[in-house]
Length: 433
Image (cartoon, rainbow, N blue to C red):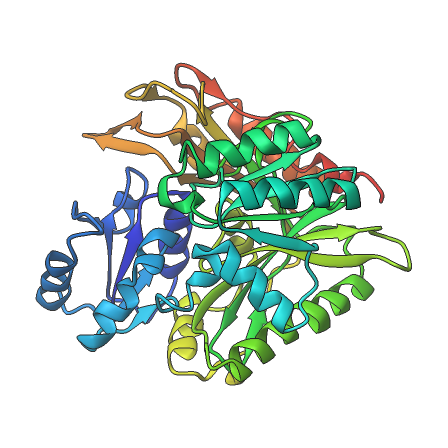
């Protein structure tokens, strides 16, 4: 089979890397790809908006399956476009992708199908939002979370500890339109406290098969401080997730999601990502709540979850498209994975690019280490930075502590000007809850 992967980040490099292990694949292409992906796939510079050009490429190169990495093309309806042309696309339709593309859509779906989530209200104007904020802070004095309805590059959810702060956030979203049309509506919800987890699953509309759970690190600075990023690192599995909690997540979240897509007629085919907050973790009354849905693989969670998957990824994708997931059984290696993201200093704000990367050859020869490129460009035999998140360095080991040490040992051997990374990725997994 010939497979086309759409995307250019660390998630897509990981997907291409995993697909390259399949004996059923003849050739992998990637649009647009990056410096690391270019070692495994033929990269082609076409914009996602140029659908006719992509279609011509698909026809010319006899592509059998298209795998979509990022959310924006899915929310824009890329699957619908290619389905009309009989091209199999792994990913949800435009309507199904509203589970990520619209926070309002997602929260109402959760409410309708008894998926546990924070208490919320929806505002369609600034004046309405101000009134809701007053009521919410009276009810929940510890704080609220304000979420822009649409996609906002991971920056559209703001935790607000005071009414004054929340009003400013709402004003910026709805009046100043810092997120454009994404802020025309906002969700205002109770601030939850606890431990965040990520669960990624394959879903064909009839069956859901979850991968190993993981924990992302969103804030840019150690100790979960500073602005949110796309993710500064992750690890998997999460050692303090008990069988009891896994069962609650499966019965209350995953099964209710499946019931919802069936009974609503929405359907679903592709990856569904559950961003969770668990209150009172480790206690009898521990409770998972859904913070968000994503309609694709998480980043950087994919970089720690797919290396632990033993099952052929292509076979799972084909089974999902053919609605035969009930015939699949996922198997995983009994190891831990820790991914440390190397970023350009200044990310998620302004940063410089074009910095030469050194040490990759040394690290690529290390045992139990994987390097996934996120923002790199290859020129001849050299690599240069081309994005905010540059590399995801993964350590694998039989226990989490060694996996963390392995990842950081490799991190120290990679050099580029203005390299930045968090020093505490995975450490929360070593603390007993």
